[in-house]
Image 1 (cartoon, rainbow, N blue to C red):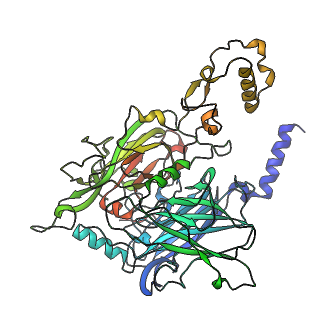
Image 2: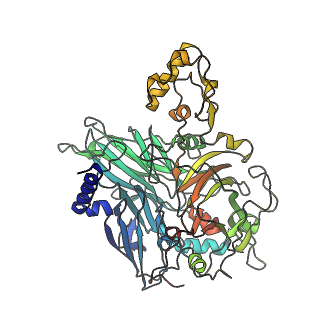
Image 3: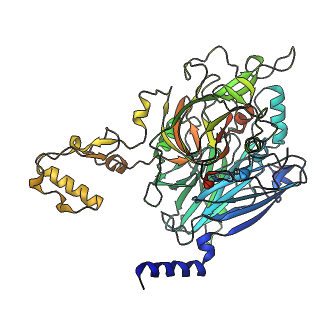
Length: 639
């Protein structure tokens, strides 16, 4: 039997024996949206839940699986569910944002979200995507690797979801309705939560504490999700180091840290190695906000407890250690932590950064104002106005018909216009003294149209119109690479030179002379897997200039701490679905528009989204059948 025939036979037998492993499973879930009485902080309220649980149920799949999730609405509010971070390749009808990819599921109606997880594995999450309903309607979405594909890090003894949220004693829907009416800022939450529990630092909450029970000498994988409505959070475990191994379901180069920073919408996987022996103590797991804006915020801390199992001791008598978290406004820590996040960029999990850019965009983001719509009265925003937010000074207005439906059926007239600006209409010193006119353009629904497979570079610039502030921007339908970021105003002439991209550098410039040159090249060839005899000493008194990828020109070969990417030309910008635009700064991202449909991009601080900091990309079909958006399902909700 020939080698090729034998290989085909083995593949055929493998598919017959374990077809579900090769092709993926179809996993079914039922989500019943219902009201449920829940008590926190000695306050009981009826609130929106999935299946009566808070947080909602865990959804688990493997890479390549198909998920079929039937959502039935049993409450008086309309609702949708978004599967945050799922690419939804050609299945935009299942993405979930209300009036973007679907009309809401109305009372008494059902909708089946049907999609396949393609080329993704890691921690994501799901949440409601209409108004502020996601304050209680959220849960983990865990994508395991394919069978027999190991993690690119130590196999954990146990995996534990850790979900941060916010608790409001009042109804969050009533809070945002009131704020929209008055034009002022909404009331802040009454507590933060870990897995739905506020913990012992709040009144009346000692019994409502998340406790992580661990064994000595084990490695735990914590799948951390920030589902808070409006706050970026620091998180730390007292006397323990966390090893970051994944962000937004993308493997990263592992690094150790005492504290992580995570914005709303982001996920971070960390390895927790417990102490080798019973430590005779318990340890707080604490989170509190990172604050850059000038508005009010929930200035409190949430704590869970890390407890070591030791059957013969009463753990409540043990000393309890507390971590030291960065100051509330520690932008220096936030910047340094962000810089450490690098894609793994291995042969198995490459960082396929678009090198060629077809279209460049420059978007300003930030707060502004709208005139008070109360005749002869003043609102509670700045100088009697109403708070607003915008992208390129356009405060996005949701339509009454879903954008994706209008696009697919060719009925866009009166729903949206395809002329979102590629840059702001008026240029000014974005991070300097604010302009006198703080009003935004309102009442428009504009989208940015992209041909299929367009390579995009987008610079997001924070503005200080009503004070600089960081903004976690989430892009639906895509992952993107963060190729650069900085503070102040983006300089299109200077800043791209420092992007995390590969550029050819003249090897001749960096080579030592004489015999050491030969030694260097032999080591270099060994690392590349090439034969040492390729260069002999006699061959190279003056070798011709050789072009290889060595990274930025600031490389110093004499420094022992030079990162591998800067020596060997590995490009490793972090790949994410949610990025925090620095307060008073900018961030540059790149993505390939290879997913036809309409894709929402918005701030994941829910208050800013409510004020209009959002827009949509419309990616056209490609020419091939597998480059076209599939038709809508028969049960797609109607407006």
